[in-house]
Amino acid sequence: MSFSNVSFILHKPQLSENIGACARGLKNFNFSKLILVNPKPLFPNDKIIATSVGAKDIIKNSKVYKNLDESIEKFDYIIATTARFRNKNIKHLTLNDLKKINFKKKIAFLFGSEASGLSNNEISYANFTLNISANSNFKSLNLSHSVIIICQIVFNLLNKSNIKFDKSKKIILANKKDIYDLVTLCISNLDKKDFFKPNEKKPIMIQNLRSIFYKMDLSKKEIRILSSVFASLGKKT
Image 1: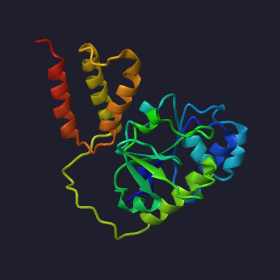
Image 2 (image 1 turned 120 degrees about the vertical axis):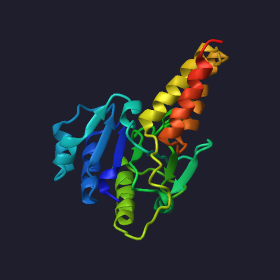
Image 3 (image 1 turned 135 degrees about the horizontal axis):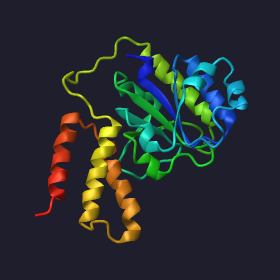
Image 4 (image 1 turned 180 degrees about the vertical axis):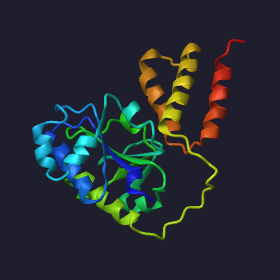
């Protein structure tokens, strides 16, 4: 298992200090891959560099994307962090459950903005949600604190050599780009069939549909089969 398989995505971070502190946290626990989606401050800037202290290399090598779709394309699993319970059909993890995750795969931990966290729409891209247990009367962890807690837990897990996985090596899991293309094809064909009614419910219907596919452990072969099915259904009879 490699530390390079694990990335940390900051979705719409608002404060330069938090971005720098997150980079510093990553480097303390041997992680190097920081991704930013539509950051509010200019990136990079002097305040981010100063707060990162000795982690300037992580800031320099960070990737910045305009939207969430592009940022998650190459990952096998997305784990969305949230302080709130989500009433959705998605598996909820605790920190202790992270030992069940196959870190031989490409994993990304997704963090929301400081002000509002992750929306249900952003959660719909995830395979799992992750909750950091805390005082039920005061759940107000700083963004960088949340990142550091998860970094430390995963650091310990990756340093253990007794974790084994039984899934066949012949099975190649689809990445998020494969799933995005499948969902886009499905939505396009449903749109042609005038499926999304009434129109005002279309966004939530698409969100729920996306959530179904993004949380599934589909293989590349299964993606090809489903793509063929949706393409056939989209053909005129």
